[in-house]
Image (tube, rainbow, N blue to C red; front, side):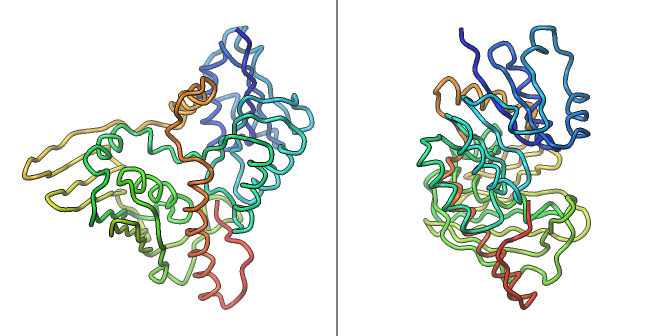
Length: 322
């Protein structure tokens, strides 16, 4: 059996979790990891489980893209959104890539969404975006109840949960479980003042955004200052569901039948190896395609940039989120 070549670009917090998962696949792949910051490489190595001699020989670390092999069956770009497009350009120019997994938020500029699609099409690269709630068993169960319904209300609320960087997860999961398409995002209820993100050089939003989907399905997302459990509520005809993502609690009242239970919340370190297997074995991948996710990203970036321009009274060429 020939080994598959996988590249992991970016070894920050999320990159290290991808690496932990992919280290489980070293019996059938060679893994090439790149980050220019040597401390990031050191931290990633410290988070790895103990590997045997064969596995260790198939795990490689570099501080430059120039040192990579030239062909990859799968690449994962886990850098920040501010540099992701430039890296995609370089990878497409210098390497042969069959499949690509991109972290979110994809990019900071609207123009990059279209340009990236052109790059992928030109180079015949299959690409997905890591909106991984589709792998949560609880949302898979809810999809069976919800798919195709009309007049559904979906709300997300909590304390400072990362509206800028995490909203795309909920746009994706609601579209997926309801089978409806995103139509409009309204950010008029975002607070004027932004917050500094946990990641230096980026911002976060506080307040509420309203989203319209097809089938008259609606969504609201609220991030308040302070702390508070992250709650997802779904309401429709004879349907009321509450998913507490902070505690893993599920409660439902469907047609008068009540149910409550705990559900598992998988970590990225438990998912990337499964996604990689699906991609490399040619099976159906549950993640959204780049094409589908870029449509949602366009709506989201447009709303955020519009809000920044309106409140800051200046032109924004990009939205500094990640």
